[in-house]
Image 1: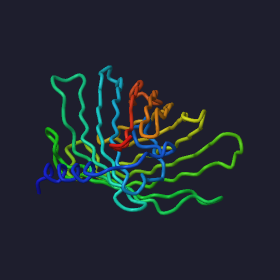
Image 2 (image 1 turned 90 degrees about the vertical axis):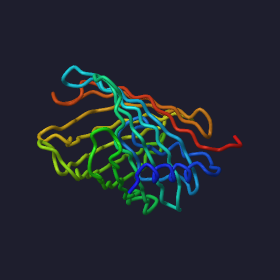
Image 3 (image 1 turned 120 degrees about the vertical axis):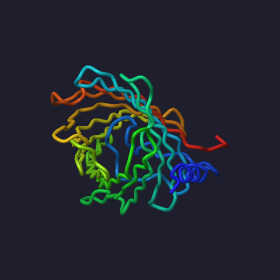
Image 4 (image 1 turned 45 degrees about the vertical axis):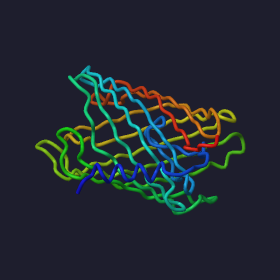
Length: 254
């Protein structure tokens, strides 16, 4: 199977026609924090997204991650996305990571007692240097707006299971990530976002725990910029993290 041809074909589908604006309420992974909400982009909406993330690791090394991503409302209540991450830092050259192909389906809008619920998953296609095996992941997202009359408050929960198809010696076969998030409107065009996450890393007996704080600002109906920072909770977690990110709806007539 030619994964690069599949990726090129999907890029063409994502960018071939017009789109609308995006929902500023929606939280996407990495824009600017780990947390994401249970809702998907609008039907036929297309967005170009990206973030640059810097980690100061626990071994006093630096890691940069650049992730460009395309997102498409393929069906009603269902979106697909394609990402091609690049990682670089304390190494001789940058490294292309696995191409990430994912989907997310939203089951319902939240009610007074029931949260919004979505189920998603994806494939990590081994296109990067030294990568092997097609890894998979499955995630469950819950979102609930709090009945507080002042401002806008939302709680989020993400449960993410990752499967390592071809583990090397010392790597896990499976790993979990749990993310708890909070979202607060602080103006017409601004949101404050906070989260805590726990992640079982690929290396056995290695976990990451961090708390993060971020800000999202809508420049216009098609463009959002965001930034965030986080701190490690345990010794083996990164000492700190900084993130800058953006979203842009692909509307040619704006």
